[in-house]
Image (cartoon, rainbow, N blue to C red; front, side, top):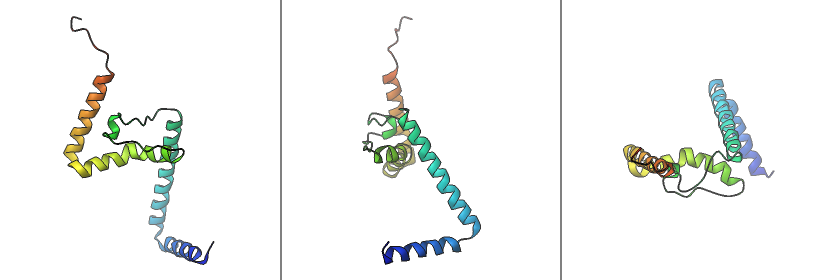
Length: 119
């Protein structure tokens, strides 16, 4: 490592050591939780249980991020976090909820087979 990288790393280590115990425990728990959720998401992705189709109502018409490893790592959080907050920032909370409900209802109707009105 170069000298600036070593100095930066030492500053970070000193800052972490100076944090109160409850902060260190909380940040550590957050990091472990986020890692476990990411691993769980990757497992679901590999099993084909998470779909990244732009037609999915969870993407609100946005294109999913694709790629070798970056795709599965990022698309999990894009699907559940980023798109929702992006919609909320552009349309507000009510607009996001209504848009999402409408898109999910349309997607569900498209998946339902046609019913015979006589039956």
